[in-house]
Amino acid sequence: MRPIILSLALILLSLSVSAQKVTVIKSPAPLPAEDKRLKIFLGGSIDMGNAEDWQARVTKELSEKNIILFNPRRDDWNKDWKPVSTEPNFRKQVEWELEALEKSDLIIMYFTPQSQSPISLLELGLYARTNKLMVVCPEGYWRKGNVDIVCEKYNVKRYESIDMLINALKEKTK
Image (tube, rainbow, N blue to C red; front, side, top):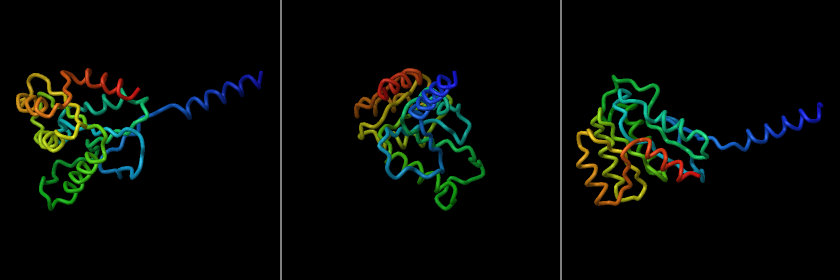
């Protein structure tokens, strides 16, 4: 009986060791220097922590994938930090995001209708020509027309909902 239990334990251990798990790197944690895994930036509505935490949902849905997610949503964001270049914490956040965007293989942009997301619009413009973008911009977003036109002009992949984007990511990461 013991050899069977030991064998089963070894099999389960080997399965758990080989199981693929997502790695989530949140700002301001250091970004990996070299890693061959697919790297995805979770860009879009955050509103200094006031927007829905859609990044957590994407992370949960992709939790078994062998990928890296760069999540700019900070757990320790302080609303008193002024959005000026001389504010050290704000500067660190912006620089982290810019570096993570550059290192990403894919960039998700989710424009929630409840948010204006001006920084996400800026990032959309910066990366529209890169073939890295996957965009969700549902009806009701205040600048949906602008987002749609930019995406059409530069052949950016668009999805009608976060669910559709998640399904596309699951297919891409099979």
